[in-house]
Amino acid sequence: MLKNITKKKSYNVLGVMSGTSMDGIDISIIKTNGTNYLRVINEKSYGYSLTLQNKIKKIIKNKQLNNNTLIKYYKQNEDLINKVYIFFIRKFLNEFKINKNKIDFISLSGQTVYHNPLKKITIQLGSGRVIANNFKIKTICDFRKNDIKYKGQGAPIGSYYHRFILNKFDNKSIIVNLGGIANFTAINKRIVISSDIGPANCLIDDLTNYFFNKKFDKNGILSSKGTINSKILNLFKNDIFFKQKFPKSLDRNYFDKYKKKLKNINKYDALCTATYMTLVGFQKFLKFYKFNFNNIILTGGGRKNTYLLNILKNNINKKITLIDNLKINGDLVEAQMFAYIGIRSIKKLTISGKNTTGAIKNISGGKIYFPN
Image (cartoon, rainbow, N blue to C red):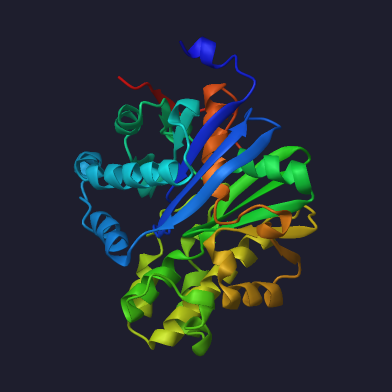
């Protein structure tokens, strides 16, 4: 059955993404061959309510500490994520009047709830089997597990879609995704290089929720009212993560030890300091990598934070461009990404390797679920 599927020249694939910011779900339906062709058909972002966002965060907060029961605990709480995905996918299909019979695959990122590369554990909630059976559409997911199997970090996993964008527009640039965690992709001497580099929105969002009961700091207005707490920022600069070799990856809650300290100072200073932590990640990674590039292309929700953007522009001696200037919707890049790498996975093409996740060789990934 799969052999016949892979003979097609291109596929209509619906990519579904809920990132580490956990602020909503992005859906994009594209037509692609998984290599050098991609056309966006329809796409849209759907924001979560603060209540739903906090429910998901509560599942993570109440996790089991015992690794033996960790996966079981999360799987017992997967039903909420399944219902969220089903609700929004159905809403998307109805809104754009899409005939689901014309969709070849759903490609599902899954909601990352736990990521510990040192222990070789990465957990994404959202059942490919449940989604496939509900919509009667073949579904591919679990992209990170094969990478972990081959001693990779399991993240960042979308580097080969970033490569597609860079090759199309400017392979002398690098892409930096400002999601909950910041990561980058570059092409150096035709080799794809990527890694997580530090926090982006995770600390800012969590602190905004804690102090102001809001999902995020719009335009960084709240952060701009504060001043840097040098003691906490200097402690952050010396975190062991920044001493680890590239490529490397992060759980969104890795920096919670600083969030606890930030909660005990002035709320505006806390947000300001958290924003400068994103800059530190940038500076540390740019100091390490010496390859030449002309431009930083920013994607992800953090690119909308005007205060953060100005901090980056004033402290990084590189041109900074928003991905939207390339006529790509920066809110939906990752939904497109998972649709694209879904087809690469189906065709057994590379989605990760030594220079993107640290895997011992270039590998594909993903698991296909056929509807009953």
